[in-house]
Length: 294
Image (tube, rainbow, N blue to C red):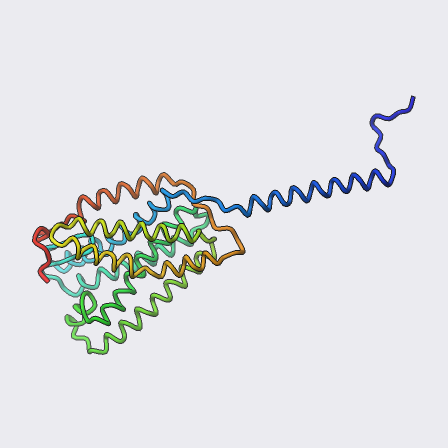
């Protein structure tokens, strides 16, 4: 009997055939892995939309209630009107006026710092990106718009402090510079920790804008005007998000970071927004039911 079991065929042809099939198997595995990696992971839509609503709502609370509100109290004034987009204070001083933009700036810078946290998941990255954008672009947009129109927050502060007329030129220039800087820093953060998809950025931005408009409509004395003001502050001012999304869309070197379902963001956004709609959006203060005095 010939001993066949357990012995390898050492003939050159057999070795070549075995190497050929092994090479093909390796190639197929490699192609399969490349195909899997190339398929974009789907973002969780509820998380994407919730992040935008939460970021826009918090931006409104920080600017109006925290910023102007605390400034009013420190000045010894009385809050007469507080809504999702309006604030009035009887006995307001310079601190009341400046505190709103200052709060937005601080919140925006804080969001940028949070974007630097290691191992940030996709949902939290999107939330902090939108938070940084809404706050910093609101701050910068006010500098530009108020310098051009000579009205609202910065114009009021200029009259209080008796600034020379050329404050308007400085305000526009500073606003444009800060807007550009905010855009570049957010883009740099995205490059450093991984891009979220452009669709997620645009969808989240749209959800935040829509939520702000809806909140503005709930103030009975001036629903349409409030909605338009909300559109300006949280829709037009953060239009730099479209540039950030365009850069993310052109990115081809890496796949965008997937945004998985984040129950914490969804629940927190829902709770915060419902409370916001039932309180601040409907109007708080002595004259909240009467409208604006100016």
